[in-house]
Length: 198
Image (cartoon, rainbow, N blue to C red; front, side, top):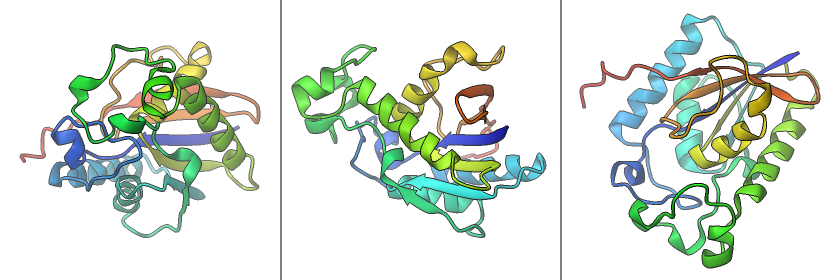
């Protein structure tokens, strides 16, 4: 049984201004940097060490990973861990989002991805990475939409208290175990950022 810790990046400038981000990128805010450092402290406090680490190709994800690991761990940037594509809606106000579930709205009307496409991409990518040799405890940094669609795919297997809930917070960590076939969410860690007086 392998352990996967998959998390969302820290707060970005687009998050702060309630803008649709997707494949667009924006830098971490001071708050986002602090959030990533607190996530890193969580792993240290729990004695969790990783044998491999991966991030989305977006700078907000790779910067988060580097802050979490204090730049002390090599990692690979993976296109399959990227955020859902929102097509022409990217860079627009979040007020433009349709109600959930999005289904194939962004594929149909904006040239983006459907939720099913994001789910399948994430499952394929994460499984492919976890099936590599000596992947016993792995860190991955991804995005809210990508993580939501991945997590929901395995929600029936989730442990009590670890079922998916909408609104994944910045730097929330989903701890899954992986048996070579399926993923089971053991816990969702949401940090207390009240010490970040920004």
